[in-house]
Image 1 (cartoon, rainbow, N blue to C red):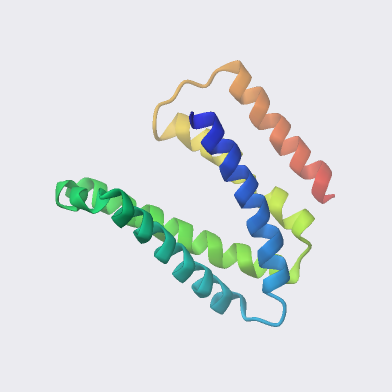
Image 2 (cartoon, rainbow, N blue to C red; image 1 turned 135 degrees about the vertical axis):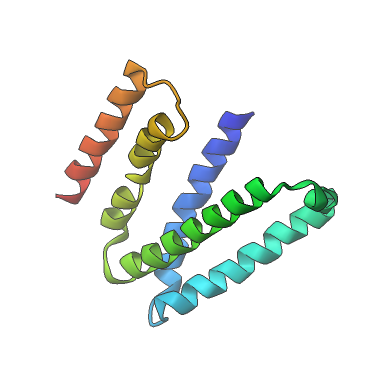
Length: 137
């Protein structure tokens, strides 16, 4: 089931880039990011309350809170820079650079999380990097 969710994530990420480029014309990129964030908040909290997941709030540990907040900061900064980049650049060039986050995440998963660096993952990361440079040069 995780593969279906990953594919759906890719589809919606793609639509996000296209919709954002169309919508950001003549709009300050920070304002556009804030509007997007409000929409995401409404959707996310709506799903939380529809599924009853809010009952787990009191079970979240301090450790989890810290890292979820840090993740939110990372997401927010990523969105701010992403929206500025697509506002002034070509989406077909910005998105491949943005997706270098895949390679950075693979490297960090080895270093920080201690995941195993197998040959398949290393070759895949190298190919993604090579593909990115082919697309942007």
